[in-house]
Amino acid sequence: MVVDGVDVCVPEGTTVLDAAMRAGTEVPHYCYHPGLSSPAQCRLCLVEIEGAPKLMPSCTTTVAEGQVVHTASDSAKKMRQGVLEFYLINHPLDCPICDQSGECDLQDFVFAEGRQHGRSTIAKRVIGRDDFGGDVLFYGDRCVMCTRCVRFMEEKEEKPILTVVERGNRAVIDTFFERGLEEANWAGNVVDICPVGALVSKDFLHKARAWDLEHTPSVCPNCSMGCNIEIHSRDNLVQRFKPRSNPEVNGYWLCDYGRGRYE
Image (tube, rainbow, N blue to C red; front, side, top):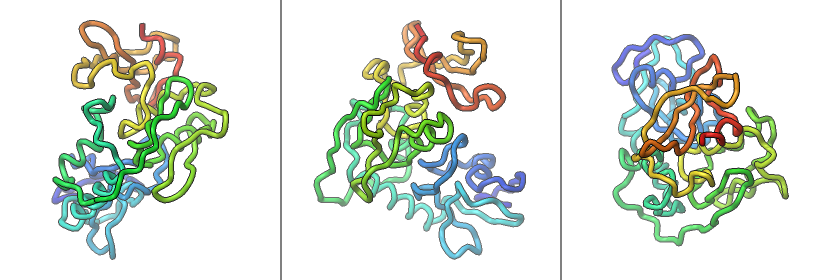
């Protein structure tokens, strides 16, 4: 197959998104995560495939021999710009105080391909902050409804504590009644996989800016599992542990026990 003029040879069953990454092309995406199922609902990873009647979601479309893909065609870029504009209709402009600032996908995508000025004149929806239990806070105004957190709790933690309630522009992530993430053992991962600042860690809240942190690859010392981690530190003080991908050991995840004992 060919991606943006680059010949790529990948195994059968590989998605167009993965093939593009191997070709050195980053296709913007939200709902896709390599460790989770792909619902193709964010509509940000749409690409042009020659012969297809419309733009196709690259996260669920598999490669085919002789396929020609254009990730930066005029139609694909126009679609991404439109999708990003919709995401910003209700998104608060609080980047200076958001914990995700500096490592936020929405910041990067809008800076790269978004409109310079929004056209919406309606008042932004206000949801506020919710305590999900454990170490997790939820800022609903920032959520882009990628549902990574919901799918993680269902597929990996196997405790469906999070869900989507309401529909359309009223949709919001919530817990079931009095249940919270304090009964989960891997809840910290929903903060890691959130592409914006909707889910944040209470422990790390307003503690340091992402660009001030030094990243050191290491191994979690809190049990014999040997999970691969990154130590984030500032001024020689450890600020947090983050999982480092290793398919043979911990995949993309880190348990709350190891994550919380960085001091």
